[in-house]
Image (cartoon, rainbow, N blue to C red; front, side, top):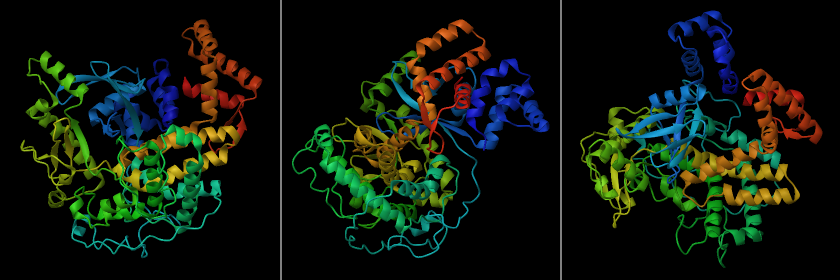
Length: 584
């Protein structure tokens, strides 16, 4: 597939090349007829390149990250295209309007979105490959079409539509198994098992159009290996004095650490008084461990009910209720689309309304009762429902039964507690004192569902294995403390799996050739600035001088780094040259 890194290396040279040469240089396309076809339809080179990339690599998705809910909020398609053009071109800020009022600016250089008051949130760019019409079943693949009886909780759908399974009775609930025997993990081998298990779920997270297999099966050998890793994780956490001090340990907080696999995990909530972070991390680890065994089962049962958030549709030990039993928490099956009581949003709306001569609001409650808030909620809800339907192609009748047949009639139901979740396409939640006023749409972010149930329990164990296999001594102790602090979050699963993925990404990059060279340049920034002052706008000379300077430093220090296969290698001049060209 096309490498986006190659494109970014060459974009800065457009102005000096013939359009056809620039197109070939940026895309790697060698067929002159293809080049001319794209340039005829798109006279500007950057437009032609963007069209070529979208055709071959799928649409690039841009998202902002809500700092309060940690949800990824996709931008509309037209904004995504503007952001991508800016990202590949002059890197100018992109301005867009929220719900018809107000203006927000997105800085693709800093990857942040700013409001008028200077408040910001992170932005990320997600490259997706083209959808395939079907997901082939590979012999030996652990995530494959269900072809044999699995556990008591997984059963083959009787027909294609998951809506038809709403009335299926819950499977019988089996008692917890006895604790598995302790074994010393082979970390490298366990990491390979985990990569195989999580391959398809990770592909589904990255590609919204990828077909979901009929069911997910996990080999028992992989489960047993990862459960052994969790026993070690829990034992180390229990005896680590730094963790006790850092996370506010109190006597009795470790009472659950010796719980059996598949045992009930007590309920917990983030930021609740009277409950230490230490205890919540204990419960988080126990829940992740249980999902190694139960995650695929829970996913299948949620899928049988079309991922509906109405808990009354599930048996007491089925679907979302089963997840709460085995983890003490759950993944949200609805999406927050507007927080009326968020100060930044209210101030921005009032500022823009005042400039436009429209009414302003004295409080979040006043705003929540307005037609303007309803319009904004409807607009966002319609987008999220369409995103959900891209993955699960329901008929109009199925959408009605799933309660996502949204009609903009401005008669939005109001809920005052969590028991009403999942009963309407769109609803407003207002708590008893009015301090919370939010709108929710009745579809989940499917990336959260995949991530929480099918990726998080495995990747948390992989992060631990990575540390144990790669580091030793004081450095290993330091990385393990980071693991317990940054990787294991005491939050809901929508945020928990994202913390695990972010930590795994940092682990992968830490000590890599790119990481070593980037840190080297940060250390010698003043010298590099002198090179810029000396060569001016001569990019070729700047590249040559930077490569020469970097190679001298690398040779003098004898620097080493991890290559793409994880091998510790001596950094060569060729590696320096490749890295410098990629980063220019």
